[in-house]
Image (cartoon, rainbow, N blue to C red; front, top):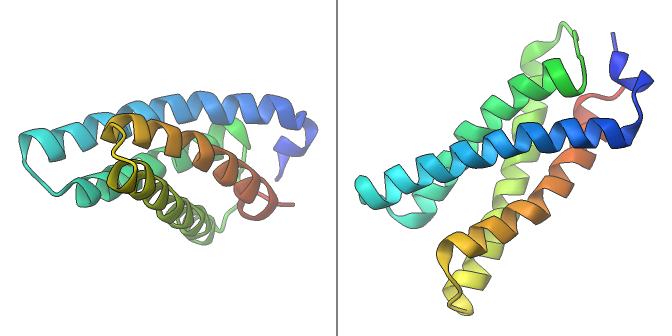
Length: 132
């Protein structure tokens, strides 16, 4: 049921990061569409894109990174999303501080926030969502 336990954590982290690159690409694309083309408020666009990308990341990480076949799919998805929402809060706080207070570029601030949040997401999901 938990085949991921046979893989070194480093390999899982690399898989998680590869999935994350796809998620970041989707996140940035959706953020850009919503903020620049549809004129949504930046934090609403950021949050919406983050949640969509997190959902895609769950599906890919469940199958490829952690090789989970846990039958409690909804419970596992909700756990992944709660961790993602906490990550979203961390993400928005970092973006708010760097962009809103320090006036750094919005997308550079978002990129830095994603780097921090990926660590939180991996270790929280490793320890909780996909635990044995």
